[in-house]
Image (cartoon, rainbow, N blue to C red; front, side):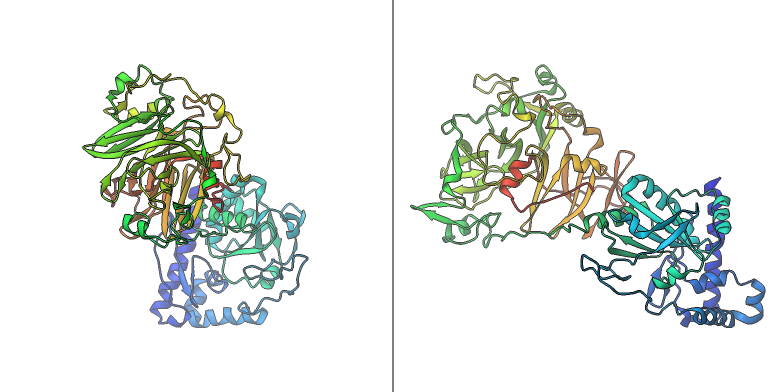
Length: 634
């Protein structure tokens, strides 16, 4: 009933608006504004006009008053005379295009008062429809939407349900003040009752319309979005398109007091994947992915301080890599793997393989082959990082071993060609002949065994038959995953998050950002973001989100399978959303798998480029990238 009544009203009102546009064109009154019908954007339609250079999904007072001019008056005096009369009347009362009569002053925080972006909106005192007097200053410390509306403006009415949903969604953190322009209490409440609209946010009365005049309000609706200090961060001319646009405004207002400042590290001066360039680098050249310079100490090339490469206890290969891995079927693996246990899962050249963490924790490295091509699988239990690499030095495939060393409490590998040391998290040589050279990372999932075998029932599984006698299935780091800090020293610590918070880190174009798994889940399991020049999609499959543990006896390690993609397709950055547990892009409505493949729609068959990432402890990411930003759910 509510939707039907509202639809009838809006359809009629917008139809009148479109008739005015068509009639003005027919009469040749193009100078009133080149009105453009942009078409239906919602199920009940929307018309937008370009008036004096403003693209509006709104009513100008002149046009809205015209709707109230009777058809007889239009016929008798014609469009030009009628509009001239209306314009003249308005201008006699007030000049809507004049500079607002607002006192410019400075408050205690030295922010000027005014109605422009970056200014603090002047205070007002108005009465609510319930007879309560309120002041704008009452809501300092909250995000505030000051929304000017009227019953004669269909676009104002159209956005009320979305404003109400936002008000309910954010609870007391967001306040919406609906200020009615020059209409009586009876007209306003009767109108809302007839359309079965019952907004619970404060509705204020301005019977003299003085506030709209003071604020220079011309377009209807107009909404001033204020941050927690009362500073204007957005002036929305016209209707909010949908609830998502309101949420974006809230997010901007929430972040406004503490704007994100991207700290850009100095990028390498050479191609760190080019062996020849790395070998020719001179002392002082920037060669590290984090801006590190090449150092030479006693003839040893290195990009991190040598005294920060620490002994973890075992000698080289004391934690023995798996050199000739054997594989079994999923059914055979079920004999010792529970569905909740973690595995590293990868599909390459048509072959899917799972590497149980209960095996990797005892070996940390698997020198593997896919159809005759080497692939390096690594796992550091101290940082909870599972990373795969293309193990090539130049064009030469090379196997790797465990050095027995740690850097920032993370696995340090060595290559069996030059014995250079390599950091697992960065994938870059940090000491030795190849210092500065980087390996190409390959996407790999940290995922529950039950989820992996459901997606890949024909998967091969790393066998316990490794050639070594180890207590597979027993956790050697029992208790470590329940909290606390790292066992070994790290170069820097960061208290912005608990040390063993699980994050996914991305470093692009010298910029680093951490996405806590829980924060991603808190915003619905999906984030459309940009880092440097890359448009990112960070997404969690809702069917692969369960509670903590993963076979580690952990209270801090969850099993939220998180993947990161470049969301650019055919040169266009797509925006994604999850609807009913499925992934869609907003531009074309194409459905995508959570592996980044379009299943239907305009983009069917196309794939997003996967960006390698791994879940890891916050202490690990922040020690490698101390200037990192953090994605926050609010």
